[in-house]
Length: 607
Image 1 (cartoon, one colour):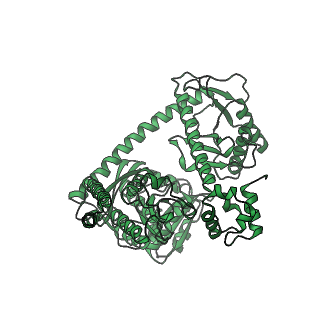
Image 2 (cartoon, one colour):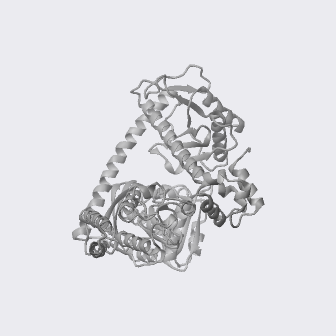
Image 3 (cartoon, rainbow, N blue to C red):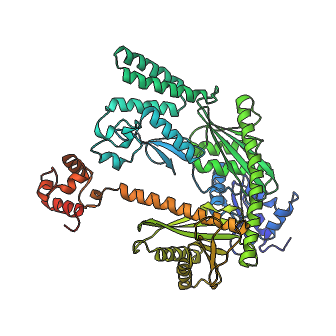
């Protein structure tokens, strides 16, 4: 072990016997490891004398230049602080959970007169109720679609809802009851919302019984159309109920967590059970750090659930350390009791077996995928004469519709494939419509300005979707920033725009490079180029929809929601407002002549 760079005996003698967190730093001030302790003195001393250390721990200790500590009021507080510091510094020798996206939820905005059910991802600080989490966006949207068919609760934005003068397409296809234009009473809509909540809470049997009583009442009152709709709702709910495994713990939320792996390679699978219904699973691949399998699972539980809250019960594939401490910290974070269990039976054992199978399968699939990507990177290095396989590749693309809502994408690939946490989009500004070259130059300048500030690593290879013109725009942006030595290539489609006919234009080479259609390097380039195109297209469509959804009335100063509503009611919609004169506009309640002139000019530019 290398000679330490600080006075160990003096430091150890000064440590308090209190709970807290310690941070091991190298000579450059980088955090190598973060740990918690019930007694800081005993825990930190154990690294330097006492128990034998693994070779990996000895390597880390050889890099330690100093150790910093933070004393906390309790061990629970130390666990929370440790989790926050690991997420902030991402130390090399800790178990690191790569988790760049929060789980999706269904959000019910209960504060509105006609509550909206919507897809939501982020911190749960908005007013209203949240249901989930769901394992994927697809599962969340499928549930929302089911709710639309069952109870027709609206999912439109509040601004869209407030400015309707006639029902939209969702009403026409029986996915909404038209509350925006008064086609359903507040009481009936509230009953649909209450049924929606009960279904999301897993109380399907209760809802079916209530719907059956209402169907009987409707039949006796000769309201056969209403009775038929209630009958269809009952049939759909019974079908859903039959496809789910409901246990005696139907009111509980349970996660089954299993780990598979050895050495520094782990896969953790989480199976989500909400109100007795299996919602699917997600796999995670934490970096092992210094931990064995049990320690890695314990570290995963802390980082994962202290960041988002925990369900009522967590089933684990093996016993973990500090169960009482973890349960206490999760209770504090989630505001309800949390129980961590292993060695379960019955249905819980089946859920745990499912999680274990998914973890083992995820690990083997990841190993196979990594081997494939490694081969492709090495082939790319040979074809482009890079000297060594690139560890980081960035690719840019630009998307727009006739110059509208231009968006540039930047996707990142590494040794394990896509690095989605590093993906970026750029809303392009002040461009001549359709000028892809200027848009690409702007995106590259903005991206590499941040890279030069140290916000992201410098890539080994830069790919551009396009031909010589796009290549020239990108290299011009790099030259203006003083970036040198970076290999840049443009990927141009062939004459028939078919896969396998791509040409690579390299900076400094006049003749394009054409790779064989079965080349592993070309397959990797196609994959990266297609991912950049997908990411750009998605961003452009979202930007375009936001722009088109926004009413031109919202851009007029002094024209608030109430006045906009008065105008829409008076003229039946935007088309009627465009056809109205200033005098007609000024007759609307709350609209002065000056404001009427502004509305007229905005709705009739150039007239």
